[in-house]
Image (spheres, rainbow, N blue to C red):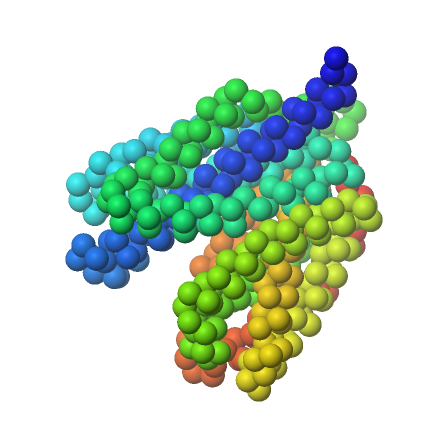
Length: 395
């Protein structure tokens, strides 16, 4: 017979699995729609129009991350993890039936609004149910949802669009969202919060007031997401145009770096549990990002391809490894009544920075080459190192 401890452990990991699936469904909706570009342009849609359409889910997500965080703080994780994916399901189903581009764009925006719900809620769920010495590993696993979602989108969306058409392809993330909503309805339980205790007033206090710790973590994450975005956005083009690889070979390497990056997030999370610190490992990762991006810039400038390719793989893993550490630290420091908003601010800043990477660094690459772009990314990582706050013990 299962003991109470075993039952709690099973519930804990099942809710982590549900949170990962819900987050992956959101990632497929937000990022997978971009893989409709070939199908949309093949049927005669101008590239500018198609690009605007596939950007709408991201816009919906960025505009509502903080608002969803506030809702999570008010009503809890379970209702949000049901309602957000349900909104994705409805918006996706309606988008599949849309007959004009304006309606399609509005519905994709609405789906992005629903997708934003899972960012804060799934993160808070982990902090609420996992003890401090296991949160890093759990959050590292949760952070694999994004590359998992991108991978599912890359495999399923264009294939379904080519075979059955664009409407059927839009139903892929909508169906995943529906499954996530049902799973959350059945399996998600809000973690307990302290009620009417002597610490209740302190926990409800605004953690941003009179303390720069959270703002500094947000700033560090914004600075460190730029090297990540630079590598992710331009690796395929660099390998093909400068190194001379075929698109197929370059695509295989980029996919492999995504898988290694997901493993890196889990490993760094487990490391933070072992040392009992999020911010100490975060500082180390920031320093490693400086070193790897600087070395990659040198290799790109000097055309030392024998070194550049391994450095690209190393930089790809290192530059994504900070995400789970910062995410966990924000949730722990913000506390049970503010972590939804804290995670919303965290994600909003990172997404805005990521959105700026393609145009800004694309212009820099055009003017000065890939080496200059990698060096600027390294310089921004340098600025992040002294901003990492002094460590706090997880609560």
